[in-house]
Image 1 (cartoon, one colour):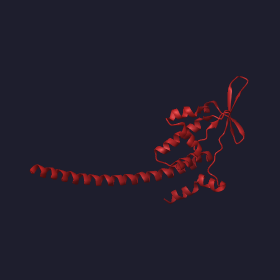
Image 2: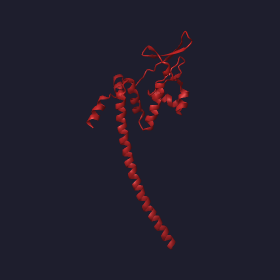
Image 3: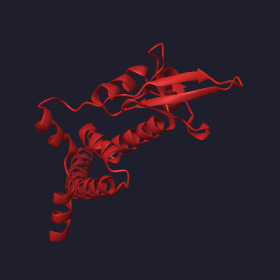
Image 4: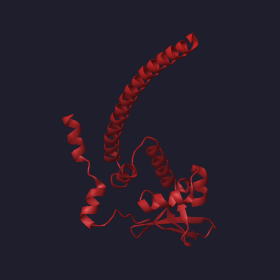
Length: 191
């Protein structure tokens, strides 16, 4: 138990630290995509990261529009925009300012939906997803995910115990009411 507390203390709460430093809500600067045609008439794609144009390798270039992503995940485009407003997603922008989703953003979206299915809040999901952007080794993200997972397991165990007790009480009441009903029906037939 002490070890877990120490590990948790080592993992920074990125959202809290950021908001204390800036006194502003969490912000992410979304990179823009730049397209150019080289001398062999191939389209090259570059992403602007902190003012540096980085080429995107061919294997990384799974780019989808918001409509394609919404259809793939069976959600509305409004849902995707909402996650972007919260800072959970940061799609690239084309020169026409259209949202373009890369493999990384699609992976984040999968994590968001998985986290929601497991009962995590959007703030918890945001913290886990964004930790990877700050710690590429993934250690902090995994430590925080394990911590939240342990909390969620405890919550589920507590709910199971509560539901089990509720089921026992209902079974007792059902038995008592069934006996009472049978007694009343028997008395009515005797009359």
